[in-house]
Image 1 (spheres, helix red, strand yellow):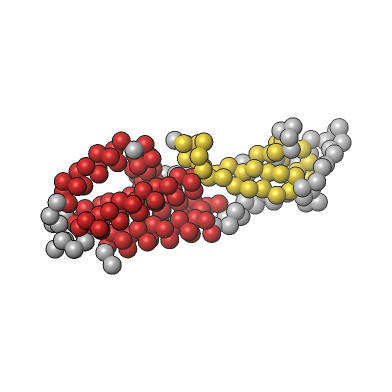
Image 2 (cartoon, rainbow, N blue to C red):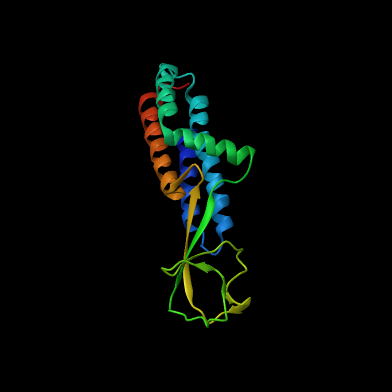
Length: 188
């Protein structure tokens, strides 16, 4: 198995780890997301190292590099990798809260956590330890709710991070497959 294919397998492993991250542990998802980004970025670097002596690889790869530079998603993952490696973890956590039953709050009380919109969807921006709704600052564990989590990149907030990661993986997979078909028998 080539080193490039091995790295691609590792990238998919990190994608699977992201998807296995329980919603109760969002920081685990973010850690796996950042690992995915680093490993994904290294696929083309390993490919260049592995095949640099293969006849015709340099010309083929120069064309592929130009294609990747024009691809907004490929450019996004270079940017994300730079941010993740050099600045901070990437990905922002958004919670969507849904009440499992209607609640009536007496007029002198205020629902202080989370804040709700008229359609009963709330937003949560508190840490994992805040497990209850609060009315007048008092936790109310009897109020039942569920929540889902979405992870987004600030550069592309309209598309979930998982969706962008899978699309990026598929592009890398196509590139690696083409490279191996053309050059795996010719490398030194």
